[in-house]
Image 1: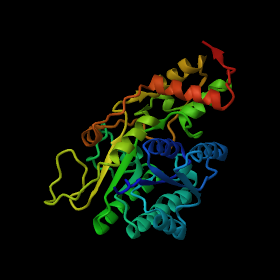
Image 2: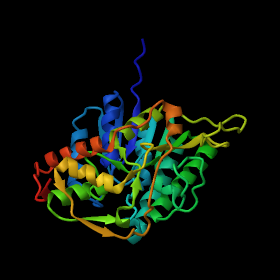
Image 3: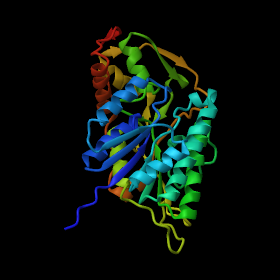
Image 4: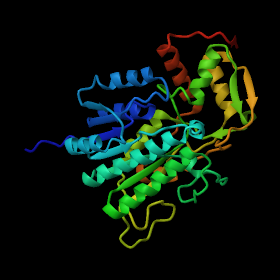
Length: 349
């Protein structure tokens, strides 16, 4: 009998928040996982190294610390490991940082993605899955966001680079027959999260007895998506390989391209939660009351996001469903453990 082929996944940004959780899940599935991460100092490198150290304990995990913009390194990686799946999560993240440092987004998000597509063209995987963002919907006000809606008016350079990635990947899917799924994330949160995200900043400030900055005077809504729900969706989408429609006819409600094996898929919780309710969930989990600085909305921000996740459900049979109160409690529990069981100096409820 021939040996069963152990499938290989290449995960870019493997030491990042989502990449770490995804690598863990794919390793549990018995896959071989190759990670690449440059351990950038955009936020605490110690947190990234801690994630990476956990992954390196698994015998089927290999990691290369370097930039995806490095053409030769990436080509060598594809040539050596011949990944069956490529999940591209590496990016310069953050809407607000892109206002002050747009060049880093150009180099990483545009240049890095180009090099990845070139490597995939030379060594084609079964399926490319690339991270986009709900921010790509930009100025759209029709809710919930659906993949078939036009998304032409991005409001931050970060979002613009991600929308450009979608277009770049479509052209490669069309020209080189590279099956590609773009997924648009909706405010991902959970244990091991990013320190620049609201949940992390709010929890830290509340436990340290400092006020939190609440933008748009609290009148913000987000489709908060728990990280393990997101990872489960990505895992299931690996097998939902898009095919170019033979007759150019796309099923109603599907974002499949009429001319390429390419589609975009929302991954969200299918609901919009008021920021004030999110803060209340943190207060409940910490047992402390937050002092709030109410501030105007920041440039590049959108007041609301809300995903229509029916296409994800149709393709995979799965719908994210973790409630915010449960997900926030899991994060606060992790935060207290990781940072030394902080009791907090705020006002006890």
